[in-house]
Length: 223
Image (cartoon, rainbow, N blue to C red):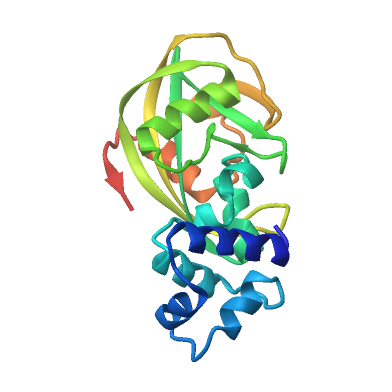
């Protein structure tokens, strides 16, 4: 969304709320209406801080101003990155250790070629539990049932090949398959079951810790 489109959206919401430029300027702490006028006509850049203040005084979600659903197709990560770029942020994730015949399912990711647990970043309004079930279905084609929480783990310095940085907090569950057959999606190069003594190198520290805890019989660990 360019400055002009953003300005028109802000103007439209202001009018819907029955506020004049003068009234909104007063709420924002501006001395006169010129700043609001320049925002609405696309003359002024709008900082993230200003967007949040506008959302507050217009009594809307910031996503309504940015027309989130239409622009980002409900992609929360893309929405956040549009504002912060590659800067380090906190992100919540969930995944599962799926056991079958004493082996666990691992995924070799297409973005870095490395092995880890299937799972991923949670979506808005999703619980850890729901996120794990959705991610496993998307990435493996399998329907799972959660057995218990292995633990919640931190990867404080995760960096993707794109340059995006994050401190990821990941809930890892033990789960079993209830239906489906293994099918790769675009995020996977391989999906394969491994025994404890044949595990490949695991890229992420949160996944390494979760797998170790699982084989050690640990439950409900939070580190």
